[in-house]
Structures are given as C-alpha cells and as structure tokens.
Image (cartoon, rainbow, N blue to C red):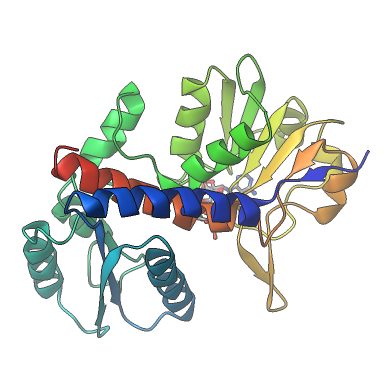
Length: 282
Ligand code: NAP
C-alpha cells in the first residue's frame, strides 16, 4: 500500500479563500478583522513563523500590526503592550510568538492576553472551554489536523486514536478534539510502556513528539491514518516525526512540509475572523 498524501497546502489555500470572502462581507458591515503579532528577540524560526502569519493576514484581507521587541524587553513592558492591545478596538486577536526569552514567564504572557482576543486558544479560560466542548477558539495545530481529517472523509467516530505527545499546545488539545468527535483516544508520552505496541493499535496515529523520523513502519498498523505534526531539522532539512517509509503502510499520511504546518496558520486566521465577529456581535 502507498498512502494518499494529505495536502495541507491545497486545503489551506481553499480555507483562506473562504476566509477572504467572509472578510469582504464583514468589511461591508464596517468590520475588518485585526491581528496583532508580538515577537520578542531574534529567534530565527520564530521570525519565519511571524513572517508567515503576516503574509496570511494579507491573503485573508485582515488588518495587522507587528511588534518586534528587543530580547531585553522586560516582562512588565511586554504585559503593558498586551494590556494596550487588549483595549485597542482595531485589534481582535493578539498573539505573542513563543518561546519568549527566559526572563519572561510564558504563562504570565498567556494569562495577560484577554481570553476574548486569545486566538491561539492558550488562555486557561479557552483551555477550559475546549475541555468541556463549548469553545469559541480551537487550538490552531489540532484544529488544522481535524480540518485535514474532515477534508479526506476520515471520521474519528469509534476509531482507536493514539496521540504521541502531551504538550499543552498540541498533544492534549489534539486528544480532546478527537474525543469530541467520538474517537477512543490514548495519549502517549516519554514514560509510556511499549509505545510501539500502543501505536500499532491506532486507526489514527498522531505524532507530536519533536523527534525526527521517530515513528517507524513497525509502529504502524497496515492501513492506519498517520498525522505528522513534527517540524524538526535533520541535517538542516525540515522533516517530521514520522519516517517517510511509513507511507508504505499507511492509508493516509500528512507530508512534512506541506501537511499540518500550513493548516496551523490558516486556523489562526479562522480564529481571528471569529474573534472579530464575536467582538462585534456579528
Ligand atoms: P513538546 O512540548 O516538546 O512535547 C513533546 C511531547 O513528546 C512530550 O509530551 C513528550 O513526553 C513526548 N515525547 C518525547 N520523547 C518521547 C519518547 N521517546 N516517547 C514518547 N513520547 C515522547 O513539543 P510540542 O510543542 O508538542 O511539539 C511537537 C512537535 O510538533 C515539534 O516537532 C514541534 O516543532 C511540532 N509543532 C508543529 C506545529 C505545526 O504547525 N506543524 C505546531 C506546533 C508544534 P513527556 O511529556 O513525557 O516529556
């Protein structure tokens, strides 16, 4: 078997077109979605992510502001800027690119962003809403995975779903979204005993580990759907958490690059559009 490659780039372009059309309609009612992106320091990967987010804003017809702050910015200064943006009516969504320098508390930054403008869905209020299944914003990477599954007609209902990774930004919310769609979900992590055997039970296997080519063909059941969230550098080349040889066993698989990655930013745009609607009662 050779897996169907799930094209996140194509789906992303399609969803962005839809967002642009909805933005045009909103503009006619006097509302233009606005996103503020903050970056602290010079981390090269973060610079690329922020540039891609700015580009996506242009594509979707959004208003955007970028704040590039020096690495020595104090936590107080950063929280001051967030407070201003919380009160700025042109801004519907606020995102602070992580990681921030070590002298700044990530959680303090997450807590400071108004949960109504928290388009990353990291704020404890939004995390709680996701847990109870009554959410406004979906966490971007897991939401992108769910869109990809839906696009390819893959319904998690009744399926064995295994998520490798339990981070707050990917693993845990990913498991929750699969659960909301009636998957039977197992979350694995670095202390999971006999990980390969657990993975082999999966109809849908999601890898969010952060280790290049971690998932090998022996860990995958013939015909499984394999979603690769990983974005790793292997000798300078971007690669996922899944060994490309897995494509010989999987029925569907996401490539890296061009799978989950493009969907993540598109889901951020979708959240920003929703924030604009909610804040304007539309
Ligand atoms: P993270 O916070 O480092 O979490 C990694 C998880 O993998 C942890 O839960 C860890 O377990 C688990 N793990 C590590 N080694 C393991 C092992 N040997 N066996 C089983 N589990 C193991 O990473 P993250 O932020 O979730 O990101 C994961 C990957 O996704 C990274 O490559 C990241 O770059 C990528 N990512 C991609 C996107 C995108 O848009 N495509 C977005 C976000 C992240 P413990 O909890 O036990 O330590």
